[in-house]
Length: 180
Image (cartoon, rainbow, N blue to C red; front, side, top):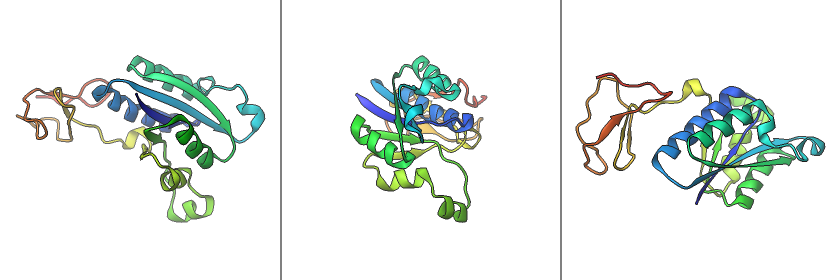
């Protein structure tokens, strides 16, 4: 089983972007478990509080389960970056999908960056999703091997560069659908 650690907070745009990235992985792979993690700064709040008790956690859980993922919830208390790295190791995460925020270079130095610290310290690969408006969306996907293409909507792709197949489909759903 491939396990993805998805640390969430209460920012709807970041969590939506994270869920979008994970949903795209679910389209090309089976047997994915997503561990939703919320790190509280207060031990009393973390005790027994599941991520789905947050509005963003409920939305993420619903979206991921509808997409076919097994979802496990976990709450921790402490320094967010340290707890994320610790949870990734403890759960055996194969990948971490973080929600990043825009900060200036000075802001990152002064206030620090959870994403930056996790990317630096984690042993699993980390993907920083950003916000949902900034996600690049694939235009086509090979139905045979899952290879994705980023092209203008009216681009015709005759064969897959990876497997040579001709079963390329426009990406649909809540992503931009190319028109023929």
